Image 1 (cartoon, rainbow over the protein chains, first blue to last red):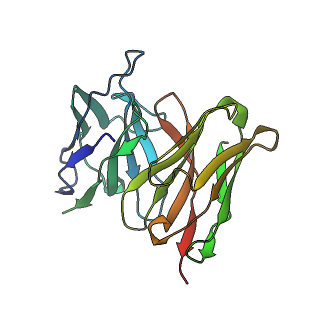
Image 2: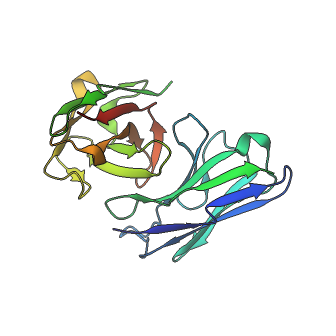
Amino acid sequence: DVVMTQSPLSLPVTLGQPASISCRSSQILVFSDGNTYVNWYQQRPGQSPRRLIYGVSKRDSGVPDRFSGSGSGPDFTLKISRVEAEDVGVFYCMQGTHWPWTFGQGTRVEIK
Amino acid sequence: EVQLVESGGGLVQPGGSLRLSCAAYGFPLSNFPMHWVRQVPGKGLESVSAISENGYNTYYANSVRGRFIISRDNSRNTLYLQMGGLSAEDMAVYYCVREWPPGSNDYWGQGTLVTVSS
């Protein structure tokens, strides 16, 4: 199975400051159609995961533009330009190229 | 509005069986591949199983292959997961999840908790 390794696992941030989460895959994530299926999810306490980013960098409708995704090869990144209080939670990267689809361990974002 | 509503979770003895259901609202289930993803409370996410739009193709994680069966009834807009040979390692919240676009899960249900204990 593809291993998705996230770092850091815990991220204390100051309100209004930027934050960045990295995700490294153990295999190439380019599908036979040429697309790279990397996604990012946020899970707030007590809630189901919510997708933020799909296809490496496409932002979901309703997701604030302070969230952005990037990357290629084995390394992918989720950036928050200015952290707000509602961003608290656990963020997961996920690959949808190889079955079984696999998730990173999760990065817990908390406010300092 | 798209909604996925899981049911069927509960307490089951080791070695027992359980069938989860997921009712889909606000969209035609027949147009989308569907997945089950589970999460041990306080832990990470694990893809369990997936099924193509017409149900002809099914996929399983190694940890459940041979014990779980995914199916769907598009006429009832409902997804199922038949689980057998349950053990403590299967205790988790099970989420019903829609796949769209390919390679990604967009909508998630609220989850249903499966507890395995004697």
